[in-house]
Length: 228
Image 1 (tube, one colour):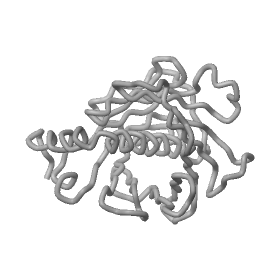
Image 2 (cartoon, rainbow, N blue to C red):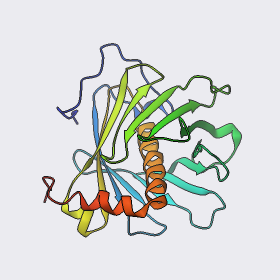
Image 3 (cartoon, helix red, strand yellow):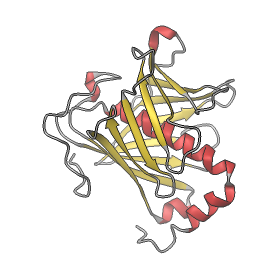
């Protein structure tokens, strides 16, 4: 698996990033495709494949939970992470736990909007050990209209992953959104997948708040060099 040429190369000597586990880290760039199935209701909200089309992860939702909850499963169907949105939160706070857990002992990190009013989506990520939340451990800077984002280490300019939406016929006809993700070497790709899923959930909520803008965004896909 190789990085996409359109992306800037990672800075030499980038720190290793292991949040979920070192077994999700490799010494080379990892290209992933994340597919969001917009027409499904409860099962299989997202699918994640590698550059060869092998299934890496699936993300499933739980309709009957009090909180908006997603479970990240590995290729064998084992729960890797539990993503939970806090119901009362001005900053769209999500909390992520190891496995299918809600136990505070399995708490890994928090993701929330950097500010209440945003033109471009910016999210701050705080690891469990960062209880003060004065400075974020990672930052996501995204474009809601372009459906792209860059993930940085802390408040630095060090890039650890990038994502952009693939414009394709299936996104219009079959109700699927496809996103190309490049995870830089020595970066936990399960962690990055979780961040992308949370970003898309926040973007989807934003779309639902202004459905007309969401429709215009999808209509603009037509004629933009569609892939067949």
